[in-house]
Structures are given as structure tokens and as C-alpha cells.
Length: 177
Image 1 (cartoon, rainbow, N blue to C red):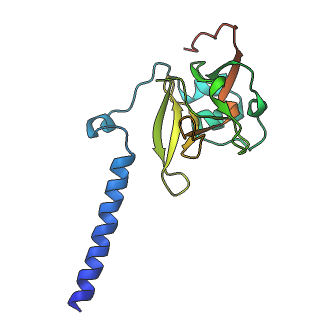
Image 2: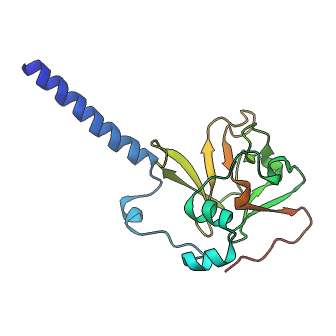
Image 3: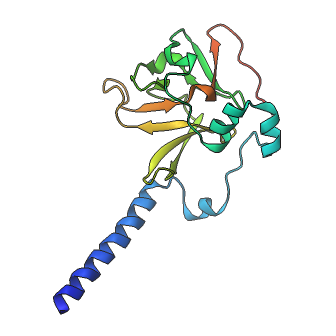
């Protein structure tokens, strides 16, 4: 009986401590930072975003939705250029870092440094690395560890509706403040 009690206690302790450890590892901020909500350079109310974005853009960018695969014209767009966040127009990806992942969504092996933040979401029952615009906090997609091994090994699986393409040589739009 005592062995059974010890065994159950150890399993419960392991379960609780594993949960805390993975949660701590997943977080990108200290306890103090977690208590303060991040302030973005571009902020708007839900109503303001709804006036600026299409319903599909709003669903993906502001509600962390996902567009259907193989529906974005950006999926096969390989021309030189820059991808900007469709919400605030901040540059987030360079097309030179794009690759065909075969997933049906535009995929990049890296973002423009400092322009995309990583967060953790549990929306489908387990931790995934969510990618968000570092200027306005809009949801872009997710990061996976199955990208090109010759570069970063990362795959930024991005919703095409979250991006606008600006051809190389064209002026980038001003931030949508």
C-alpha cells in the first residue's frame, strides 16, 4: 500500500514539475515582464482594426485565425521584395529567405531581425511557437523546426493574408499608425 502511495505521489510530482518546467522554458519573458502587457508601437482598438482590415485579415491578424492552405497568391511569389505586416505595414520578411515547404502557406527560414516576436500558444492543446509582428502584435503564423537544414533549420509558416508584398525597388509604405 505504501509503495503504491509513493508511486502515485512521484507520478503526480513529476507531472506537476514537468508542466512548470515546460511552461518556464516556453516563456520568453521574466515574471516582471509577464505581469506587464507588452506595449506595441502601433496600437488600435478592435473597432479601429475592423475598419482597416478585411474580415479575413482581421480573423488571422487580430484573432490568430488560419487561412486555408494553397489559397494565398504569396505562396508561389518568389520575386525579390519585402513582405510587410498587412495590419501596420512594418517590414517583417525578405523574399530572399522564402522556400517552398510544400505546406500550402508561404514559408521563410527567418524574419527580418527584430521585426517578429515569438510567443507561445496552446490553442490546439500543445505548445507551439507563435510568430507575431513586433510593431503591432498581429498574428502572422507559427515557427517549426523542419526548415532548410542548410540555413536556419526553421520554418516560419505564415498566413499570406497577414502579409503585403512590396517589390524590390518600390518604396515601403509608412507605418499605419
